[in-house]
Structure formats: structure tokens, C-alpha cells
Length: 450
Image (cartoon, rainbow, N blue to C red; front, top):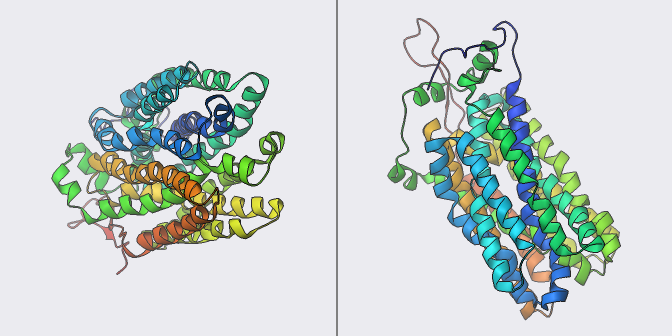
């Protein structure tokens, strides 16, 4: 990996800001991904009229995306570590965009499942790619905020899916919705391929920005230059890899409700009209956008103030997941106005924890060469929760005559379990700073707690 200042770079005296453009592209990529994946849950009430889909079958359809999405998380992380985000990311976006467009041509429920399986394969690299990009382009003190910027793409995509898909379904039909949103990925992949490079090879990255990026990476720089390889046996034996994976399983068991059954809950159980849902259904996701960014800012500010990395990352995670458990009160609330307040608070708190969680693979990975793979394991846990949740909710609804009591109280319990895992199991490794000239031993700042 070249270490020299890139040719034709901006003046070394003035720091460029290309890293923020790169993370902006990452955020837009995740926005498109979540718009594509959330479209089915919004379109499901319209599709069920055409195909007469029972709740149990709806649960399977809503879950099918996550089958391949989960299965391809770990291979995606390896591919990203091997070939890099510049190649893998646009290939993934092109693949998933094709399968979204093909959903518009479906004539049977079996083809819906096939299309969602194809979509899941394509979207599997998106989160590991974004985590890998942040680890390469940002110093440690900026990673939580940078992660919040790309992670807010999921809230933007989920929020846009409600009015966009609903409007297209009402004005045309649900097939038009998949056709339109599926086309959005193609301009993005062209732009990414033209703009993205490794920071050390980017012509628009000044020597000052490159030095800033490396200023807080410490051991990451030397390890990357040494060409460390991913050792799978070591990853599989790493207690912290499994901590991140398990914590995300339970977080996603709760959060998947908003990606899958949330529209049906408001429309079918709470009596929202399609017009009302189109106006207020996106509120939780919209508020969550700001909450995601706020969580990243809070975590990085804590770190900058001298707080240990362990606390700076865990306080937003644990407090956010703990507050998100308020979703368990939803079945006992009669007022739909108060219901939306509680659901919005739960969604926002859930998102508040997200940026710090997404910064963890770079914090616990043994070297930068394995960040993508560790992120793949973490997101695999996320998708285990995502694929399990809609099926379990569908079975709960079938067994409970359509009652959402079990699913929503269960989501609250999962939030609390996840918070406990991050609090007691996850440990952040010490920070190793670059060695100063003449220093005989590496400078370290202990960031762990007992």
C-alpha cells in the first residue's frame, strides 16, 4: 500500500476534506439499499390484496431477504478485505438494483422470494463496506461521527420508503414502486467508481489530510503497510467477534419490527388509513436520522474529552438500547398520537446507539486487514435477528389472533439483552499511538476497563 503523498495532491499546507465526500457517498449508498429493502414492507398491504397473503406467509416473505443477506455477510467481509470497497461496493449496488427492478415483474409469491433472495446477496456487502471505508478514511476520534453519517442512510431510506412507495402504489401500482426505486442504484455505482480511491492514492487528498487520517490510527498504519492477512481461525476463536455478533442479534430482533411489520401494524391493527400512514408513518425514521448523527457526535465528543474509548462507545450504546425498550408499552396505549410518540422515541433511541456500535469492528479488530471481516461477522449477527424477527412475529400473530402484545414486549426484552451484552461482554482494545522519533517503546493509552 503506497505511503507516499499522492501525485498532484492539494497543497500539503492546507488540509483537504475528501473523507467527508467519501462518507457522503457511503450514506447515499445505504439510503438506496434501505429504500430497496424496506419497499416490500410498505408495499405488502397492497400486494396482499392481489395475492391474498396470510400473516404467516407475509412473515416468510418479509424475512426472505435476510436469508441470503445474512449468509453472505462473512464472505462479503472477506471480499472487501481482499479486493477493497472500490471494486466490491459498486458491483453489489448493481446486483441488488437489478433484482429490485425484477420484483416489478413478479407474478407469484415464489418469484417474490427469489427476487428478495437476489436482493439479499447484493446488499450483503453494504454495511461491511461502509465500516471498512470509515476505518480507512478516518482517524479514531472521528469514526463514530463518520459512522453516524453513513448509518443515517438507513433511516433516510426507511423514511423515504413510506411516502415514495405509498404514493407510487396509490398513483400507479406497487409494481411501479419497485421499478422506480430499483433504477436509483445505477447512477450511484458509476459515481462511486469514478470518485473512490484509497486515501493514499487519491489525487484530491492533501498530505495534511492524509496525516490527519493517520494521526489517530496508530498501529493500524504499520499493520496495514505490513500487509497483514485475515486469519479465519483466529477470528472464529476471538471472544470479541462473538460478543459483537451476539449483541447485534438481539438489537436487530427488536429493530427489524420497523423494517417489516411496522406498516401492517399501523394499517391493520391500529386502524390508520393509507393517507394517514403516508403522512405520519415516516416520523420515527425521520427523527431517527438526527438521533443517529447525535449518537456519533456524543460518542466522539466523549472520546475527545479524555474519556476512555470503552466508556465513550458504551454509554451511547447502553443508554440508547435501554430507552428503546419503551416499545414494550405500545400494546397498552390506546391513543394513536401517544403510540406514535412511543414508537418514535423507541426508534430514535435504537438509532442513537448505532454509530458507536458500527465503530466497534475497528476498535476490536486485531489489525486493519481484518476490519471488513469483523464487520461481516457483526452484520451477520444483525441479519440473524432480522431474518428471525418477521417470521416469529408472523407466528405470534397467527397464534394470538392478530395481537401484537407478544412481538412488542419481546422486542423490548431484546433491547435490554443487547444492552447487557455490550455493557458486560464487549471489551475495547488499548489505543496504540504512532511512535515519536527517538521513542524506544510504543506510546499507548489504555482504553479498556476491567
